[in-house]
Amino acid sequence: MANTMQFDLVSPERLLASLQVSAVQIPGADGDMTAMPDHAPTITTLRPGVLKVEGPEGTSEYLVTGGFAQIGADSLSVLAEKAIPVTEVTRAHLDELIAEARSSHEAAKGQEHTSVVDDAAKLLADMEALGTHMGL
Image 1 (spheres, rainbow, N blue to C red):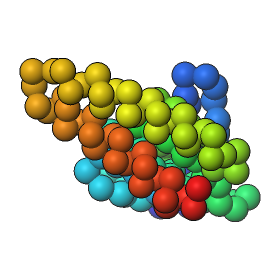
Image 2: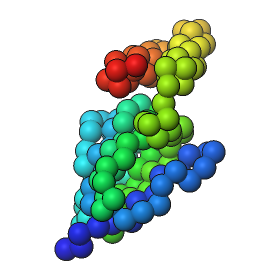
Image 3: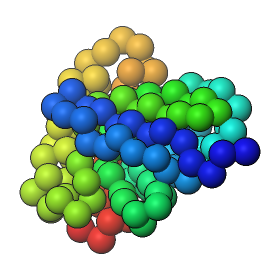
Image 4: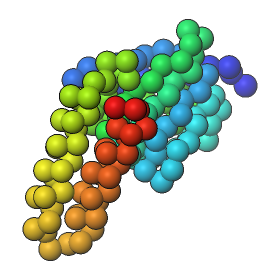
């Protein structure tokens, strides 16, 4: 069993991380999970939350707003809708993300399908809870 695996975190704006890691805690849409070397192959969607990366240089955290994670035995690739290092997140960032989620929720209210409204409401609730979790 290898002690590390390749981890890549990409957002539409940039490559945020590409390094060897020992574990990554993922805010999965169906619940939090930890990917480690020799993990069973898995693809999961992400919910808004904090992605925690543990590597030889220490721990780093990234706020993600959604996306996908592809986990393999020796690698993990995260394609995030938006990702920001937690050390760079300000109240203004969070307010902007909450405003976007609120706008999406308002726009969804006119939809015929209740699942669209429910998804938008969950996104808004997740974004607001994220601010509380981060102490912002």
